[in-house]
Image 1: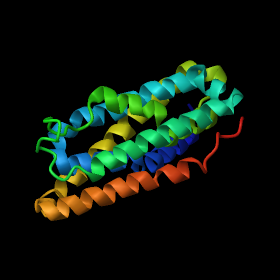
Image 2: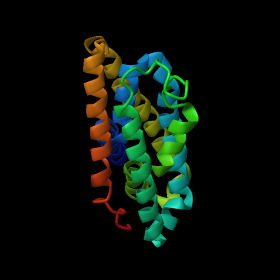
Image 3: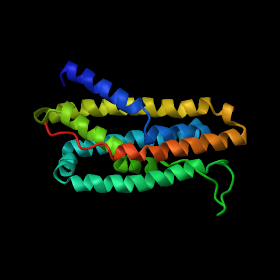
Image 4: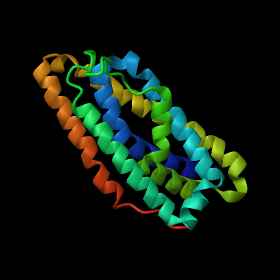
Length: 207
């Protein structure tokens, strides 16, 4: 991968990874409600899940979305429903360690739940499509793809850990139950609001 393309890819991934989105909103809320250690499976699920999803897009799945845009539209609808459910789960997590009506204590996302979410997160899929189109050379895929995956693993982990750690940092400010209730409601609302921009973005143009 040429050095100028490498720098462009690094900047693209930095902006895409650290700016607010569904993953980061959930990691922030998880850091507040469950702490950093219990959020680690969620962090690793985001990192590994996104890398696997990007590799699949680069190796041909992206062409399927480009050829059949309705598949991407269906992904958006399913993702919107799931995001609204997650937003409700966060907004109602006033006391995460207390038993719910069914007797089960609230839990952070597991590794597999976070990894699978990457496949239905239109922001992540859209970024993956754009990155594969703009930073991978088809005739040099065996060289460029490992470099992009290394960048993705590094940037995704750095971003995910930062957002979860920020949640942990403000946790003391939210020890009072009333404050935590309003924080969770605000984060749930922010996550629900993230649904709308997903429908305003389209597939990246073909190269």
